[in-house]
Length: 225
Image 1 (spheres, one colour):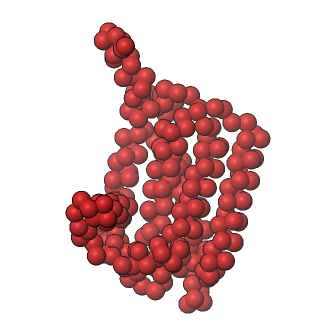
Image 2 (cartoon, helix red, strand yellow):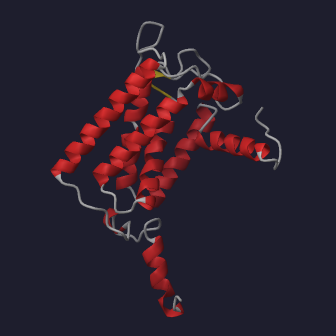
């Protein structure tokens, strides 16, 4: 039984991981993560490289092209509803993968609070690699194109899938360094920007999936088909 006199201490202990006190990054989480050694970082870096190799081999086996079939490679492609979308190095959807870095960081930090930073980063890359493979399956491509969220989805090239995976490091590192509320504000800003300029974001995709799930379970009808 929790004594009422100890209730404030209980709140601080259990909610500090998400709502830190002022004073920097190190006070963010009540539960300290395991410390990394040089060996841990070498293992993590090697594991990330292996994830990327397996991901590229899987993409090749799925029939994805190495680069855009247009025959050249651009640093940025910002034209929506184009056959070149997700075919070059970076595009509007690259920002969604930066957000994956934030999301994976906080999920891993909450679910596995003692997991060291190196292995958390490795786990985030493994999750992103799996996401990329599933996202580029024929079923996922048809799902994206069937609704109003992403109508210009034709599957990623291998180089685009590679950069999509690499950029999660940006979000992961920012989530590690920034205060939680700053991270949340940045995520909201990116989502608003994507809704305005890319006409789609993670929130819209999530709402569509939930709408269709509820319709499947008999709680209503989907508005996205």
